[in-house]
Amino acid sequence: MTRRAGVIGVLTAGGDCPGLNACIRGVVGRAVTDHDVEVVGIRNGWEGLMRGHTLPLTRDSVRGIIGRGGTFLGTSRADPYVHGDGYESVRRTIEANGIEALVVIGGDGTLRSALRLAEEGLPVVGVPKTIDNDIAATDITFGFDTAVQIATEAIDRIATTAESHNRVMLVEVMGRTKGWIATYAGIAAGADAILVPEEDVDIEEVARVLRTRHRHGHTYSIVVVAEGVRPPGGVGGGVAMHGLDAFGFERLGGVAYQLAPLLEELTGFETRVTVLGHVQRGGTPTAFDRVLATRFGAAAADLAVGGQHGVMVALHGTRLVAVPLADACAEIRGVDPELFGVARTFFG
Ligand code: F6P
Image (cartoon, protein in one colour):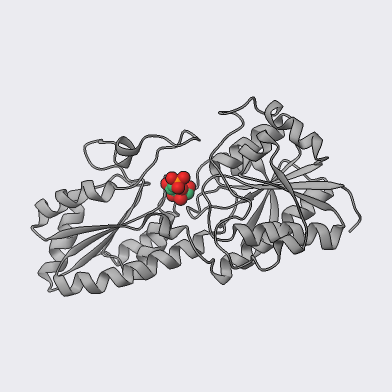
């Protein structure tokens, strides 16, 4: 491919996830090796772009990182539209570094900011990453597979101690507004009920399922709870407890502690809670996430260098495509009802 851009920038913003380093490596590898284009890394997401914190990235700077969790560039929840003046707050860094296209690796909040910057004239290519798997216009985001693997292994472990003690165990997983991790890990671990933000919580129905199960001789149960579910009665769940983050998103975590006493009262079964939290986002990515992140990164470099901006790389089936950033930001993608139907078949 011929050289079309002199320098491209890359940043990771929002919550981290396994595969970010693989993705940065994909961007740098493709840009440097196949396009002979220089890459500038931005430290700590949008914050670094606003403050001018950059570093040159070479093939050597990304050697040996494909299997490492987190992001060696750093990340933050700073936002040029919340903590700055939109494009004006990043223009100086873009111009000072001669950045002709910026690869933005992020989740819903980050991609929305990228879209607004693109509308103001910044040449942007988005890459969808999040363990929550809730970005529209792509079949999957990297980070999700690793989080599901971690959650499944945890639930498998919790199940054996639940069985020994005849307990109901509520396992709370991440998933701010959508229940992808809960659904996948719940199916994989054979959960007896799964509560997702896409559906109102019917605690009486969950209690009925558990009582029936116990009547049939099963003396323990596993209920997987996505952190973003609203407890019955309209109480704010974890929201009320932890406030908002820098993007203005609700800080979640702990809704299972509100649900457990309700279930215990309705069933009479001892009910315990495990909140998996950030363990789901940490550590080494699965092989699937490493490959997907590498492919996304390489494709993003191709688009950035080729002058195709205002788009996001996406996976449709097994093929990589470029979709308008506006499509990716049009909605938060929820769990497919057919998939949840499979989970429901095995409740109880
Ligand atoms: O957006 C991904 C996510 O993992 C959510 O599921 C979770 O609510 C949030 O990040 C937690 O982010 P932080 O670590 O910034 O509080």
